[in-house]
Length: 107
Image (cartoon, rainbow, N blue to C red):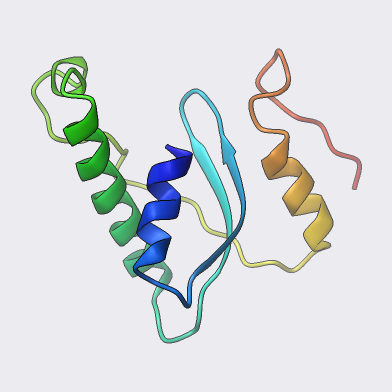
């Protein structure tokens, strides 16, 4: 997944992924995008391209998702940075490292 995300970014040099956090069922990205792009357009582009590339590389995924072409869920959550960037970056980096699946950060 990480390599597929970075492949997508190659085509958009003004997008910057600062941190990637990958869990079993979710992906967190800390990104910087220029204001000329809508967040929904960026997410759509990332989902569409990573999905296509993953399905080509791992043909069994079509069977895993019961005949649907969807790898990603339809929704997403976005928040702008209004607090300390280091807190957000640490949170994303710690995804998947805790046994409980939840990282705890002191604010």
